Amino acid sequence: MANYHHTTRYSGLIKTCVIFGDLCICGGLFILFYHWAMSQGNKVLNASLLQVDITLVLCYFICALKGGVVLHLRKVFTYQIVTRVFRTIIYFVFLSGILLSIGKYMNVFSWFFGGYILTLFICIATHRLIFRSIIKLIRLKGRNLNHVVLVGSTENNRELFHELTDDPSTGHRVYGYFDFEPNPEFSKECPYLGTPDQVCSYLQQHPEIHYLYCCLPSRYGHIILPIINYCENNLVHFYSVPNLHNYLQNRVYFNLIGNVPYLSLRPDPLSRIENKAMKRAFDIVFSLLFLCTLFPIILIIVTIITKITMPGPIFFRQKRNGLNDKEFYCYKFRSMKVNKEADTLQATKDDPRKTKWGNIMRKTNIDELPQFINVLLGDMSIVGPRPHMLKHTEEYSKLINKYMVRHFVKPGITGWSQVTGFRGETKELKDMEGRVHGDIWYIEHWSFGLDLYIIYRTVANAIHGEKNAY
Image 1 (cartoon, rainbow, N blue to C red):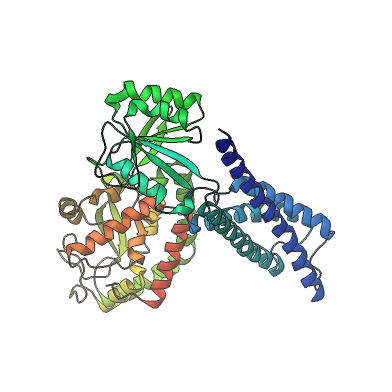
Image 2: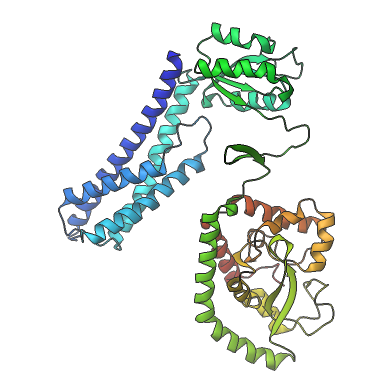
């Protein structure tokens, strides 16, 4: 029991030390920046240095508590630590910027403050990564360990053993496993400890163990329940490991509806109401700004050149599949001669239906701009899986596994697949499979920052030109 309390205190001490170090960097760095600016003859503050520095340190302290610390966790990646620092710095910029502006302490839109924030992010990220390296070294030396036993030897627990022990720096010591008989498929490094009804007596003899993972099937509830009761009464963390590998190979995610737990096949950030609201608000604001400013000018230019180069309407309207497979009319500037195959045949590199002007519009993505109207109407989003023709959806949904998953979100003017090499004609089935895999990756990893990055990549590709844009 003493070891458990030591481990808990150790994690609390790590978090306290990390935040204290961050605060020292926050305050100390600002003092350095201030003296550097003064040495250059620049007056950057309208209040005393002490007053501003204390304000910044207090703001950072509040934001660090909100942003949290993850580097003490047993399994955490570098990008997760840096992302957590980035989130804390964003909170800090808003909070300190508002307070410093209201108090008229300094100009927060200056190069001085911007340079300070950028340097602060780099210093704190470096500080936390160094701290993480020190923790890993401590755990490699056998300190701050989690002592674990496994109950059951299904594939899930066998994989769990490797997850816990393959990287010694995560700080787990697995004593062995219990099952009704030894399992020859289990790692030889994990000894067989006995049958499940011997678990409680073993835990009594080894009070240093405070983590137990059980993957016994639910039909053994009469055996599992006494183990749970013992764990609950003796400060042992009991974890139930679901047996899914007999019918499901991919990762699953834990969720709750009220007090009822359930497992989902993938994370779904856009199912959360706050994320939906943020994405929709951005779509409305961005599309309105574009449609009310640049679009009228582009429309006039496109109309004049289109009328000169080819007969027929300016806009091309085509039925496509959207959110939940709902059909909608997708708008584009017409880049081809009027033809009967527009709704069934995909454009190819040297498609005779295209005009020279149409080719220019496709290369620069100008033909897609009327889809901002679809965004404003709510049929599309600025970023999402590209909507496909009805014929393609009908065909590929039968050929590609999980093809329809891409319809769990609104289609987009641009998307992750389009900026990572899967734009344009799908000559082979593997091309469409790559596009679908990219769309599913986007759905699972959505963030507002990812949308902004995709928009940036789309604009950059349009400026430099794309070989698949035809």
